Structures are given as structure tokens and as C-alpha cells.
Length: 324
Ligand code: CP
Ligand code: NVA
Image (cartoon, rainbow, N blue to C red):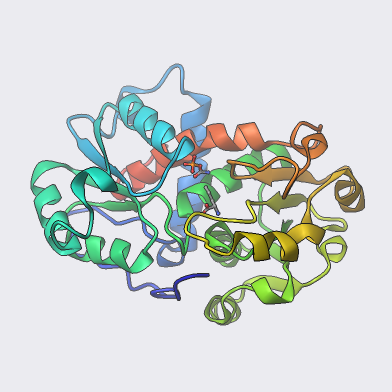
């Protein structure tokens, strides 16, 4: 990972009024909070076409969305989710506001807090995300940094549970690079008490600080080299791009990760009980083949849809609300 993790424990800045909270990393939340967010996501999905009046938790609220990096899912699902909860969104790119260049991140946070009720941001630097939260007086939500992608994993847990029931006690197998999405999976594994087996090349192992955090927090994290060993008998195989946003060593990663492709043969080793997940966008023919992406075990488009539902539940949580 390009940037060492800014923190591995519950030190989320808390300078918010009332019941407001930042959503920066899953490690900052209690197991009860994470469970409540996932349960809320299941409920709000089930009544999407007939919401309760009390579901409009963003009524009268505006959320700024800042994208320093490209996005399809995060941008569209947050925008739709905010609308469906009765709120409004304003989108700017990091380029448009020269994020971190034209003025400090702290001043950006102070100014935005005077205009809007919340800030959702995609920014590579995790420490800049934390800095923004430290100086904002409205909730800040992590829409992906180089370090973590907690909204994604909330949707992933929701998706898993739709297909395989409660995730506690189940086994998730991660195959490929140790990236931002994996970190959020490991944090979720500790909180929701499931096993996570991780197969990576020696050169792309998870950050030792994350492994230390996992141990201290009793996560059942198992690191290995062999993808077959990681997936055999698993409930879910997860892949992600070999080259993430901000990675500069694409050629090296392709060479290292070639043996980690999720293909029909690997899914056969996993077994028919295993579902396949990928946060998307996928590079078909690299980390995953068409046969797996479009095959019967794949739930990748449910997963993409669930970004909408899971993030609604995250937004509700950020304002001290929930979908009962
Ligand atoms: N999975 C995900 O975050 O997709 P986008 O980069 O398109 O937002
Ligand atoms: N690991 C990927 C996730 C994209 C949603 C990246 O950071 O580019």
C-alpha cells in the first residue's frame, strides 16, 4: 500500500454536534453499530419502492460529494441514495476546487461545513481524509482512499448475507493484491466475527500494521500464498483489480498477480457453495475471467446495487438515525 495506515484504532475525530458521526473506517465503529448498519441496509432495500415517511432521514439536508478520483458506483449510488432519503447532493471534482492546493484541507472542511450538512469524499490520501474530518463540523464519509473502502465492504457484507445468510462464522477468501478494499474486509472480519483467508504474492502482503491490528482485535485472518488453499471450501471468493487507483507499478503487479486470476478452475476448487464477489470495475481477463464474472456463482451486480442500500444505512447512522 502506498500510504501507511493513519490509524488502526478508534481515534476517529469527534468534533460533531448531537448524534452526528464520521464514517471513516470500520475499525472506528463497534460491532453493534456495524451490525445495525447492515441490518438497516437489508430493511431499506426491502422497502425501496414503498419507503416509510420516517425513512426520509436526509430531508432538508444537503451533502457535498467530492471526487478526486474517477467513480461510477460511488458517485451514482450516493447521489441516488441521498435523493431517495429526501436530501440533495452537490458534486465537485477535486480538480475543480484544486483540492489541497488552492487552500488547506482544514480550511476546505471549515468552509464546506458552513454550506452543507455532510461531506462524502473520494481522496487517495487517507491522512487528508482524517484531516478533513478533524476540521469539519458535519459528518465526513469515506468514499474510498488508498487505504480503505468501508462503504464497499458494508455493501459486500449485505450482498453476502442475501445469498448465504448471516456472515458471522462464515469464510471469505480474498485472492490477489492487498489493497484498500481488503483492509476494510479485515476490519469487518474482526467486528462481525468471520474468517478471512487472504492469498497474495509474497511481495504484495497486507500492511504489517493491519495484521497486527487484526491480531489485537482477534480477527480470524489467515495469510497464505496459494490461492487454491485460500478458496477451498470457502463461502465466498473475492477479487479486485490488480492495479488500484494511484498505483504506479502496473507492469510489476501484472507479473506478480498472474497466478492469482479467479477463473473457472479456481471456482471449482472453491466449490459450488462459494459465491464470487468483486467491487468493480473489473478488468475482465486479468483478475477475473468472463466465465466467472458472468457465471452462476457471481453476485457482482447485486453487490454494485447494494452500494445504494448500504450507503443509505451509513448515511442514517451518520445522523444518529436507523432503519428499523
Ligand atoms: N466499487 C467502486 O467504488 O466503484 P467506483 O470506483 O465506480 O465508485
Ligand atoms: N482497489 C480499487 C477499488 C476500486 C473501487 C482501487 O482502489 O482502485
